[in-house]
Image (spheres, rainbow, N blue to C red):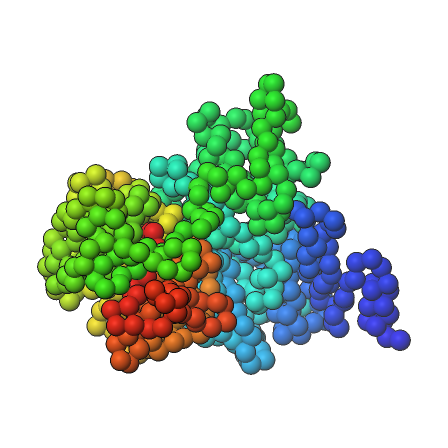
Length: 576
């Protein structure tokens, strides 16, 4: 038995299996506390210093392994692979490039140095604050090495860390951090990557990251109840997660604080553990502990788990509401009466409907109540379909020509201008605010084609602006985008002109769902995805997605779900 085989056998005979690869350049094993939902086992890559006998390519291989070492967060071992000059300037904290390896590394030998070229495909970037951005393009990075008395050393390399997809999965924890909206009435998710700290449990690492504030994708758009406090520790006790803070928060922020904690830690505890907040190791209140239910975030923000909410739809040129027997009836008020001049209904969270006029130059609003009458709220040259946010604010975009867009926001009867410099010189085809009131999705059309971006709403009143826009569905030839619908604060459904349905987000490449050529519009709410469909003969019906196929939804007076003339169309969930 060879030395390497002997070491593998000895290591695998222990409780935690370690594998020492041939060449001895790194040790990969399993670690973490078992039986604790806040400290699941994780794979370890233990860095090994360079060997004077290694070739230039072997040194690069060792450096790559050392960059992936969780147990060396400062990358002190990785720095040993560098020349003294380069070691002083190399910053492993400046960001991460995630890649998929392509061809084997090539070695180019020169008179004074040797170049080792790493080739592959860039798949993502991780910023210093943990913001994860899917990326693309070729990877063709040179490592320049010089030989000294201690062997080959790297004198130049790509900035930051360069990690394979597998290394990035091992080194970073996927975390949903929850912050407060501008009015501190709802929760807003920030999907980030957090470096795994082998000296700490996952919950402590996560809460520490929460207290540092949002990533750059939400800067200026959200608030936190934790401003001014520090984390002492996170432990478990009696099936509770105990979060120990340095000091209390303001009394009116206790509820928001506990909601932030419950939402952020729900992914680690799987929603089964309650929480307790302490201060300096003592109960939060003098006479009683501050205990938090595992689902506190859903009580604070009902849109986190909206429950059973029925969709609206158009039928026979009027607005209908679907009931629990899959049959519908016209809504109360003027909106439930026949009127062929109103299209693209948007439902608010407070029983109001906004519709776009058939000529696209006006938006009217009507209460869904007895006696509810239409009132015109907005006029323009060419308006985008309306949408509502959780604050009872109506949004639209006026497009006076094919290369100009002005975002409009109306609240309490007052019209506010919205600063959106990235949208001023393009044609905004669709604009929808997510139910968290902060994330916004836009379909943008310019000379190159159509694409979908997600950004954030920042500020109030006349100071409102749209910022942080990031492409989630790029331009692809002559592809058109027909509709978009928010599933939740993280996921956006996108309907293309070929009736292809995509699932898009800030942290993943678009995924294709089963398409149906009859689909013309979509709406979504949590786990429910609906589509307005039309057959070649013009008959219409609402379809629902079963996660396997599309099925007809609305029953007629005969109890069937047949497509029909002037049948159900354009479904709309509240804030959808």
